[in-house]
Length: 327
Image (tube, helix red, strand yellow):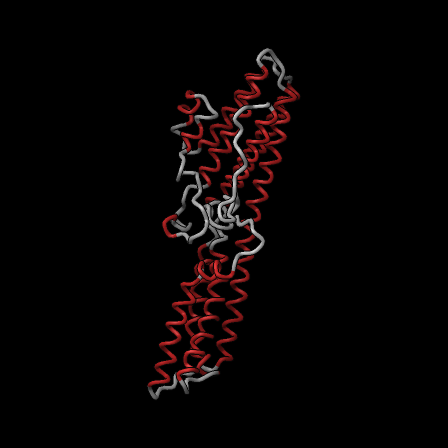
């Protein structure tokens, strides 16, 4: 997530310079051919502009749909924040007994382990996402599955026995909640809290499963490929015709007009491909790119809140931005 007020113009230009450069080269070749050779390959601008309007509407639809996925993902993790704080307050208030302090720490640490496993699963690359080695510059690398492993992080929150129990599982976050639910039943049987409060705990466990399932729905079901692919190909077809329409308007009677026409064509091509790229990089809000939901920072904030509730030691600091980006 970008935290500064605006993206810099040159930052945006550098991020999307490829269509601008290729568009200028393509248009310049066409203009120079018309300038140097007695050929006339002009196409009236009016039908091209109609195509451009249709493509712009289609790109608007794609971008709105992509934004909806990102905003839904942010709302889901907002729910995780609220439910986690509620769970922490319930643990601190409800758990009573001879070893209440140790039990409270155990329950809260296991919840932090669940968030850790969930964000690692959400950062796993999918075939339809952008490969890490081909992502654009500026954004820092995400920590999950790149600079740290799930096993390393879980050792801070779970016992070795629990880590071994969940290790073979395909969905470790689900198994951590299962262990949490089982442990809550054991604590109820040991009279650390009564039935009514146990029901409240179970309701919170259910809400965590719901939030996890909603996150997995966005992660595991891509933005429909027919919409994403069609937007790209329509944009490519329109941009291929732009220099021909510009020839009809400006012409290529001189070298100056040829360069000017190629430059204006490149700007139009860049604008349309920029819109397409914005939608493309908004489709998958958990892959760890520039405008994704900062689940690492959110999870760290939740961990700080929960551990402060029990006056824990060695609490991590909030996640810092790197060049204006928060992951």
